[in-house]
Image (cartoon, rainbow over all chains, first blue to last red):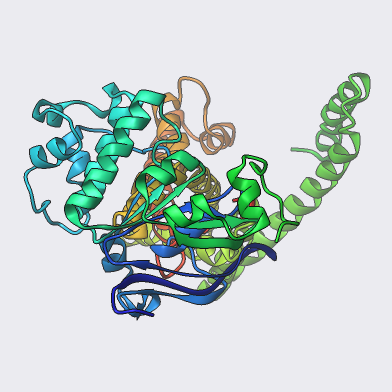
Length: 248
Length: 255
């Protein structure tokens, strides 16, 4: 474990009613970097993400945030420090401003910056603050969800396929916004995606998970130019798009 | 009522059986069991009540109320499939509702603390609390399942499980109380409640019977409200771990 690693996973295993979802996963996410977690759908990527802010508990293994076992941290503090953006944003009834302020409001606080600042950061005009959440497009919803996560002032951002439910244009915009925010704020990010091109564009490092096991790990260019395993090459070539637990 | 007319009342069951047979509903067996059970249970309760009324001892009344609460709790908990320990949630909730409601009735001098009053009134309180807790628990589960994404969102933003479950909680309390509130609105217009009907048939003036019915209606709203609130307030915890993680019973393990 290096001093500059913000998140470290050590032999993390997750079983759900006896079925293995993730097996012995270990990797580290250096401070300020974006890690893409790649893999076919059903590989256990989303589950992996939900272990990092303790929405779920690993069956075995340990996860460290800044060198501390996350189980020893106050779970509310952990979840504030480790923000999450879901594939499908869930906005609450009310205005956009209500939603952006929602995270801090759960603790009886206000966001550190004015709501308009968060809107600006996600590329929305200040007038959006008063908009009803019912009236937003899918892309706008995801931007508001991102702004809401940022209003909690996180150090780490967990991104669960944040563009997968959006049309091409919106997906592209949200991808750029998320990347920009991460870089600008120096956030450490774990970005789950099944989109190879997206991983190549946004990430510094890649972890490839297939059938609940880590198949490859390394700097993004290395992975894309010289994958080390047969399964890695097959995945890159597009031959592996769904779960295949037989692959090693 | 003579035993002859009671025996003749079996012809009503016979009619229901005929319909079942004719329409191939296959309810004959259930109807038969139901008839026998209703006959045995009600007869036994009749004699039991007579016995307790004659004893007029509060220990027996308390025992009877205790049994009623336990049976009601067991019945309501059975409806909450896949939720372990539901009984230990529902039975105390019903017991609290019964204690508060009956305590107020007796404490305010509305009814005397005699078995004739306490047991039938408690029967209504506990019976309605039982239905309400079943409704609340089922609705709670349905709401939490349906609002999974919103609950995870709140938890992920650092909210407590209570904060995450709040909308589901409200909906569940409402669901538990709605039948009672609705029946308050339509009572007398659509149906004459059983107790009032009974009193009128027994020869009591309708105006006097109505007074009791109003009392019953008001008291049921209290007991149902208390039960639904307690079941929801403590019941949502069954769906979360101590680390504020959502734990749905029998979740689909595909993710």
